[in-house]
Length: 106
Image 1: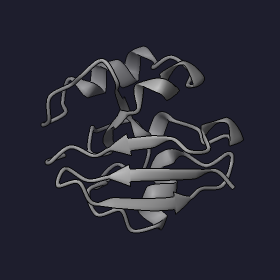
Image 2: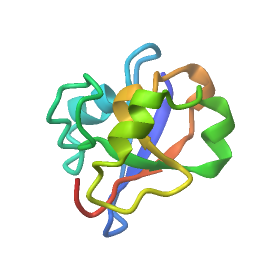
Image 3: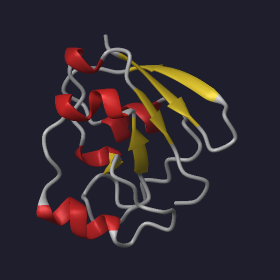
């Protein structure tokens, strides 16, 4: 099982064991990551699962779709080069050890 570390805006870390094939959002919500609101349930219809992905792992992810990029325009926190919606990241074994940061507000 890939292990992903979520770091909240205050620096608190929560290591999550994810299942390959689920989304990063599903893994985080299932594990009680408090700053993942995920209001749309993973439909890519909001930006409440916005995360900052460790740049070392960006190349291992598929490119964000136009829909995802458009939804990031609605993020309350600043959008950065490594911003992604966690509902659009499919967990794979290749992501084992990845760290993501959650912004202070969603």
